[in-house]
Length: 114
Ligand SMILES: [Cu+2]
Image 1 (cartoon, rainbow, N blue to C red):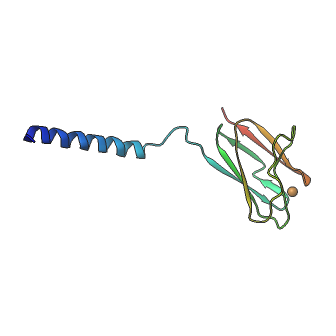
Image 2 (tube, rainbow, N blue to C red):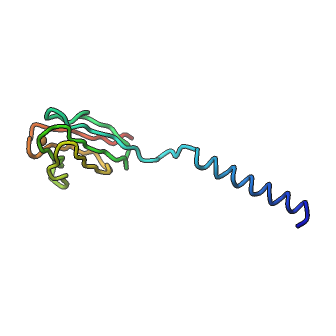
């Protein structure tokens, strides 16, 4: 290999590595976030949550009794009951109003921020 070709190859590789490095470190603007709602003392905390479309919400049950997370408007989705220290998650693509179908006073909302 001629020295000039060798040098050019090394520079190209270095440049590609640099690009790769930048690519890994650069924050991805629309990377989905994960939000946690704690279920404690018969409440969803926070009760009202704002997320970006495509974010994931994880509900964590800290009570000793079973709870669920159910679509309040038309019952389109439900977590089914889950117990202490168990979790359930959902990808949020629209505004949601939910409740615990076992304890209907427990309510929460999720709003998509624009
Ligand atoms: Cu409940």
